[in-house]
Image (cartoon, rainbow, N blue to C red; front, side, top):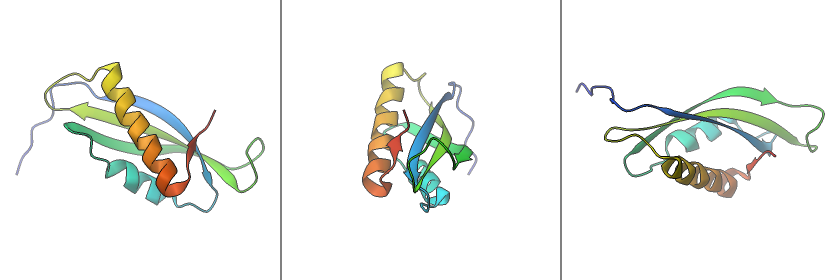
Length: 101
């Protein structure tokens, strides 16, 4: 069935995660994309996978663009922060990923 596009803007935020070097990037995306947040749709893409100097041994940095959107309203900063924090908590619990400072 056809679903018309939302009239409300997409909120885009970038996060960089410090994660085990052998953790599959596809699993990170699967967890993010499967996240349910009330009426907010969540999508993501990885735009950088850094392995090298400046990172702890056995770790890599994944930079992810998160896209959040609601069908019925423009998201507030509080909405965005709530989803972002919930996602970061889930990624930490399930994959040991932490926000890169």
